[in-house]
Image 1 (cartoon, one colour):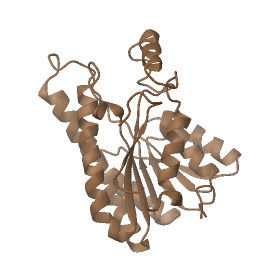
Image 2 (cartoon, one colour):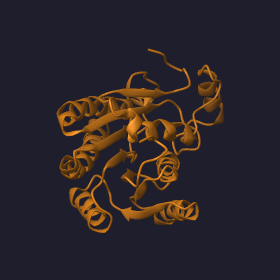
Image 3 (tube, rainbow, N blue to C red):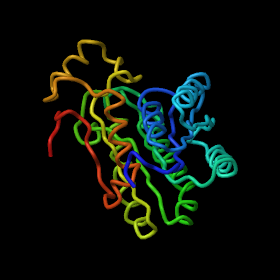
Length: 253
């Protein structure tokens, strides 16, 4: 089976009403997966993503849940299980709000709060889908990270630190779940255009970031979605515990 022939596998994409999450949902659906478009508050946008998938012949539903809330996550997965079956693919993309400040300006509540909510959401959604994946002996988990977890940038300490914790969490999930046929990987984008973060620092900053890549541009949500789709599919069956940079050569290991 290839990434282009997914035989109706069932995927949840958290935070899929816009940006990278929406691009992932559309691409996985185009490759034959049944997708759950999770959203927290943007119901109209989530419905639009579902409508675009259905108009292209795909299968999708929208399900509301704040992934920081244990009861909401449990209810979402149970609803999906009842109506569509066990989740086989989890793409955890939901962006947890954070302060954009320097260390001097930041309080512990802002830094520690981001760390706690980042890890809580990843923990909760992973915990919720693992039993079904274990029962099937199959699972693909893809977490969305950021290049800022390794390459610091001004005022991004909260995001970079919390995503660095997510990277290590993913490795431990990969280690423990591997014997069950479940892989876990991180897709780690550099600067991505057409997202809520892209315009925070203004057009001049975006141009500087584009110039720092060897490809001369920022990533698009579709660039990131294609990397996610690889890890969500069967071509990546023997790859787990990795962190994949999608940064146009901005940083090279």
